[in-house]
Length: 113
Image (cartoon, rainbow, N blue to C red; front, side, top):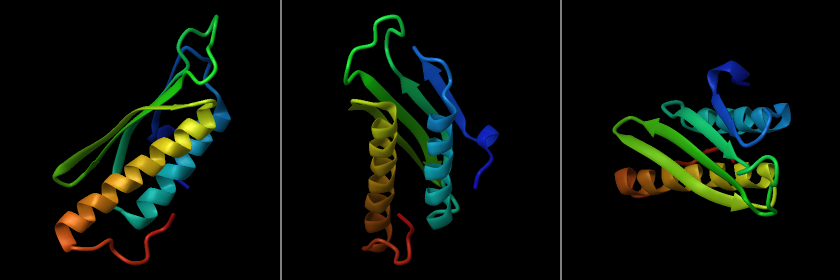
């Protein structure tokens, strides 16, 4: 697994949570196994106002690159941070799939999900 210090996970409106950071690192590791050229630069988790959090107000943004392309998944909303992280990483995978279809005419076989 990718060491947690290699993925820049930022928390806005909340104290850092190791379970959220660990999930971001695990999902990054899974993506990199299938796509070694992928670099996840930043994962931002925003809970809004920490003093008065609103249900469903958790948003996640992921900035990543593959050679020749920048990938950004932003404003993924969910009831809780773990669901928002999962949905955001699914969005990165979808963008990679779309790039592969554009480049090769199909998604490469053997990818890990």
